[in-house]
Picture 1 (tube, rainbow, N blue to C red):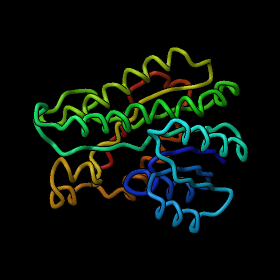
Picture 2: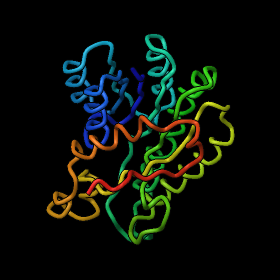
Picture 3: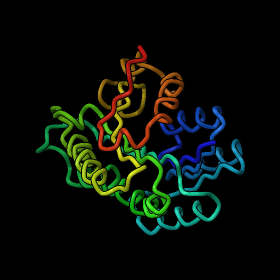
Picture 4: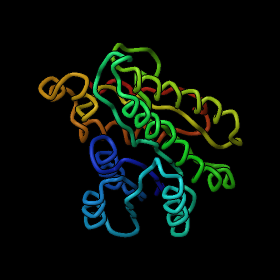
Length: 229
């Protein structure tokens, strides 16, 4: 049994991974900002699983959540930074400052807060993988997506540095999930076209086993889910 911490579990990839990991017999400790979804998950998946309403941009909330999780569970075997946002597409000079800031707050600072809260326990055990969800647009630019690209390029750099700091036995990687029907894809392509892509549950059936294979030998890599089309 693997102990898995994952952010952004209310919907999309996070919810699909949560369902699949639990189906495979692993224990999940998840968070999201959507309280109603957290209540539903808690009812559906009682202890030993644990779900909490947390705003990842708030370092104090994240630290309190980590303290709670680490009081009832060992250091995670797998930490997945999944929570993220995709603002509306627009040329950079038309992007409101608030949208740009919010994207970086969630996609970069939120990731940093979670790693900062859980990494010490993982480092002390000298084991575990830290996986941060990236994207193709974290490895190349894209017109009208500068806030999102900026945030994903940032976590690629963060991960490269973190990988060099971890002790033997651990790994820090980024993970590009591919094209999946999520809210972010609806922002990019529109609802109708996004619906033609792989559904999150179908994607997770392939992604969860792949994520469970990540180990020390992958440290520092920019991973992409092999095609499941």
